[in-house]
Image (cartoon, rainbow, N blue to C red; front, side, top):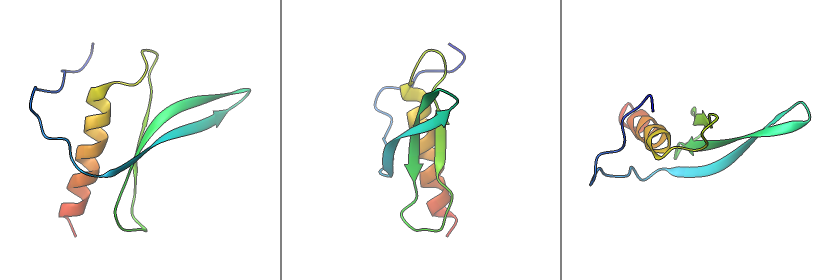
Length: 72
């Protein structure tokens, strides 16, 4: 893997998340979307790689979204 695993006991940021589907020609790509509490504001979209969804990237999307709340 090209990334570390999530350390045991690492907190999971409390942000709104949902599965995403990105349409592509004749198919669709799965993804993961972390959304801000307030809108308009950017969300964090993680598109799965060939190995599928990774807990590391889910945690990363949550952390980035939680950090965006700190800059209010």
